[in-house]
Length: 135
Ligand SMILES: [Zn+2]
Image (spheres, rainbow, N blue to C red):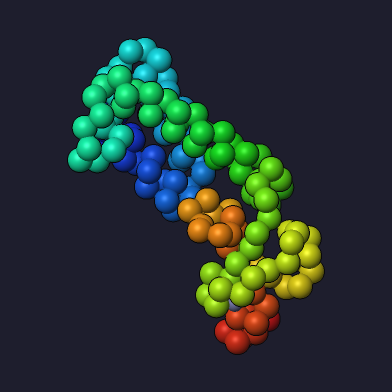
């Protein structure tokens, strides 16, 4: 395996929330590292050295695999242990405090969004749905 390619693919999969890929890539890299395979460069142009890269890669892969598996095993891929804070991806409207309320109000396309600044989930609010003629 090329651990650098795997690491880069893992970051891309995380960015685009391709959870099955995140899970598989993280587990694959963890397996490689557990067999004393050399670690990827985890910090781009900053050189951490192999032992720190190994530690960062292991911690990041364990975290990514756990998050991905939580999403994949949760109803509607909404992990229950993540606080439900919802924002409309189009207009930045804030959503209600629970997934059930959001569905009742007409929110759609709700996805876990770990890269969010203040929200953990993105969706499409009922106002935008109506404006776009999809309601
Ligand atoms: Zn909206």
